Image 1 (cartoon, rainbow, N blue to C red):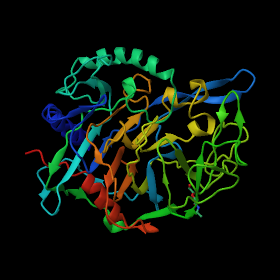
Image 2: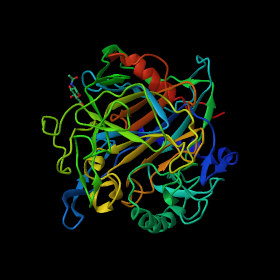
Image 3: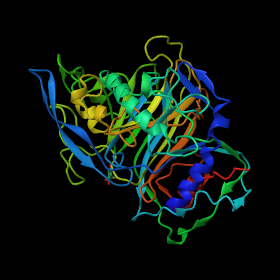
Length: 463
Ligand SMILES: *[C@@H]1O[C@H](CO)[C@@H](O)[C@H](O)[C@H]1NC(C)=O
């Protein structure tokens, strides 16, 4: 399996310079082809990050200790919180787990010999093989991370990256140092090395789906929805924002500012108790986030670890196999202020917002790579191209601000909505971000989810 998969990645990577040649360079980032799916392969590694162990109000500093992790999807198999920034209207959000054991069908993503031309619409897929971070320019040629046009990608392809991996790792130390001082655990697109990324992806406008598989669909085990939101109704999840100390939940201090708090139904104000978000379009630069419905005081699913005193503390969504579904709109607003007209949806290691999402970098595990996954992010004001990018230490000598992604983009839904599934498949270390059709019902059959996986794995168009 792995061998096939890597051979496939190499074949795709050899296309990258061709693809990149048609990319646009806008506001410090490259954009190549519109895509319907992005697959991260080989997600997870053995590493460590600095976990916060205390926050000291008298010195305005925090203590940390090293925590190590390993295994499929790590550290993104840890609990995640889900973050939203306007202008954005959320119509549906759900979280699913396999109903019994791991029902995911084994696939051979790259069996290009077996093509079935049974799709009405062309499906474009970008593959990101998560191995070592390197930097390329818009032609897909390796450059130092300090090069103004450098963007971070993941690859080990001998086609693209032969000796330069060492070079870029060294350069990356410098870039990482300069970035970590800002310690803003959001998705800041155009900050130096955090910019997004290219080349290792080959977008293949495909009219076919690779359908070879060793199907286990006979077992019939599906997925159960454990958390679900539609406007006005929040089931087993908790809306939060950063209004601590203003409206009856959370706290404020001169050291650490506003903590997280319950989010009011308007998506902007704080609240004293959990609220279901109304059908609202939150404006530019306003953020809210979603945790599970389970308080940290419930340790039956494990510990939340250390978190800031006096916050409403909830578990995130853990596990190496899990699925998130979204339906949202990102209409333009005319804001030209900070983060104006730059909507985003991203995930963080849930420890980050429970300590300090924005501020002193010692007070969050973000800067040392506990994990961020940008799902749908606008990187420059007014753009209609949504980028995905993984930030952790994998392939990056333990630094976290490199990471990798793809320069291919999802189209921003400025009037209609975009429905998408984000599938963490711990069985084969893949992470799929894929546009989908269909209902997000309380159970989803294995065949429905396998179809989404298969569509996103349709890398067949190599001819
Ligand atoms: C709520 O969500 C958690 C996971 O976050 C799950 O373990 C639990 O079973 C869910 N509760 C209900 C009633 O669905």
